Image 1 (cartoon, rainbow, N blue to C red):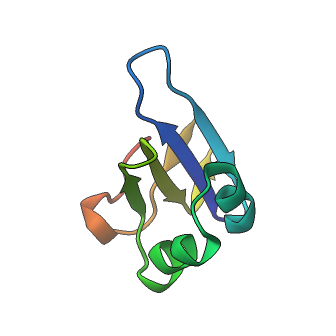
Image 2: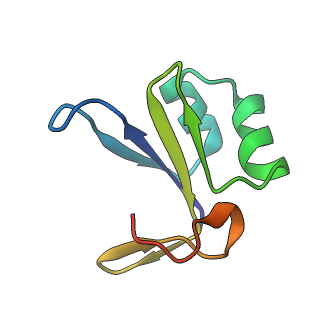
Length: 83
């Protein structure tokens, strides 16, 4: 199951992290059009993307390992890294 995780890039202690399993739910929460997110994460195959206008980073995680969230695959130079 693919999970999309939002990281808010505010100073330490003020940011947040939230996960979504649906791109439509994610689009509604962050205010980025569904078609834009679909293009970035499905058609372009991105693993992560910064949205400077919103001050967030969205990461796509394909596998959850107990105690760790890891990237699977080697695209975008972010292979096998802990979040």
